[in-house]
Amino acid sequence: MKIQHLKLLNFRNYEKIQLNFSENYNIIYGNNGSGKTNLVESIYVLALTKSFRGSVDKVLIMNNKDALRIEGHVGTKFFDDYRLTIKENGKRVKINNTNVDKLSDYISKISVVLFNPDDLRFIKDSPSIRRKAINLEISQINNSYLKNLNSYNKILKQRNVYLKTMNINGNSSSEYLEILTNKLIDIGEKIYLSRKKYIDLLNDRIGDLYDKICGISDLKLEYVSDYKNFIKDKILSKYQDNIQRDIILGKTSIGIHHDDIRFKFNGINLKDYGSEGQQKNAIIAYKLAELEIFYNIRKDYPILILDDLFSELDKYKINNILGLINNDIQTFITTTDIDKIDKKIVSKSKMFEVNDGIVREDLYERRI
Image (cartoon, rainbow, N blue to C red; front, side, top):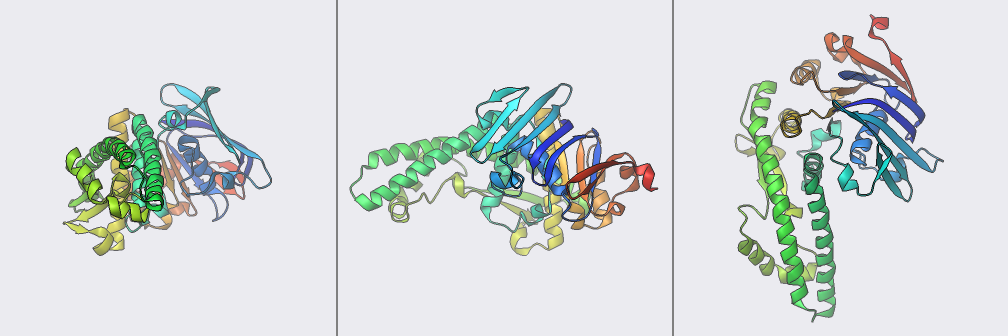
């Protein structure tokens, strides 16, 4: 998966730019606050229709503008033209100038893997952050997963609304609640199995990659779920046991919306007992494993974005990571310090200097 050409209109601090990229390394450099992250963010938004910064759509639009547009020429052997338009009242996507009505039919078309400083807090943050990450990752390789997830969330919302109604009215029918519960379990099982399969694939790789990074291989992911060892009658019994509690709280207390992932090193939870270095290494191994899974399933590597990761790591670790990345992967690197990157990589990279929303293509030979 490569992006050859990118065109931005009113995205963040970019009013209007067009850029052509290398199919290998692209280094985007400049001072903090110049717009480096905004540039790679636009590629991510084009792929997944949302920002990795957690921003609401309207803040992506340049001040005093009504809409933004991102266009990219993306593909492998054959390339397509992708367009995303965001206005305050919604977003639209097109492929080769044809409207795609459902975002769930669009999202799996362009695959992207992101390294970002915020990822290094992935282990420490709440389970919802890890679920969100897993959902995005699986959605890029399994189109039906996102559809199941949307259906699950819709039924979960209906069930929670009805629980609140039962609490207020006191005599509402339990039959409708049973219908919603059974639907929730059936769709939840599909999501659980998709997550379990993906985490199993990660576990097949993550220990070896962790070993290559720091010389120790005993890293595993533990999938924590109410649906573990799924048997429908037992899951249904859990829901029934929690009905009164759910009615009082007005929300569903068990289900795949409470799933979590634990990073275990020698059987110890890294969130509680791991050093900062161990946690960073674990996330890096996780992301590298993700690259391999994408390739094995889609027979194509995703676009890789390394956003300001080098501000968090020493030069040795940076170049160790880059050495584990397949040369066929199109890679975008943002940095304030080019000297941290191995000169061999810099010499074969296309360089972009960013200064307050202005991007200038640079040649390595000019600076040596």
